[in-house]
Image (tube, rainbow, N blue to C red):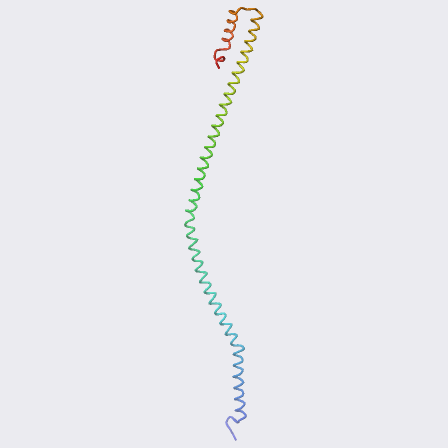
Amino acid sequence: MDRLFGLDMQLLMDAIQFGASVFVLFLLAGYLLFDPVRKLLKDRQEGIQKNISDALTDKQNAAQLKETYEGKLKNVDKEAEQILSEARQKALKNEAKIIDEAKAEAARIIQRANEEALLEKKRAADEVKQEMILIASLMAQKAVAASIDTKIQNTLVEETLKEMGDSTWLS
């Protein structure tokens, strides 16, 4: 029998078996090769989507931070002026405090100098009185030694007082 293709049952069974084998191999290759590749592509696509969404979130956060910092930069001059104003006020208070302390110290120094001058004046007066007492005692010795009468003695005292001056005796 001449057949055009030479189809017989054996060829048909081999073809069916070959088709089933190809189908099984296709399913097996799809399961072993195509599914992991599909999963890898899906995971990669999800990762890219996640990166895009993270980038958008970061961009929004950066925009918010930019607005915040721009607002702060606008307020920096005001804050700096306020800080400088507070520093000036503190400096003025410190200046007034230092001036008051200096005035008080100057007043204490002047008072101490006046007190020392008074003490020095009293000491000088005491020294003058001591000298006058010494001179008077010397005059008394001279008067007794020379047996001078009281008239001469009074004259000597008055002459001595005139020599020393009235202002020295009175102070």
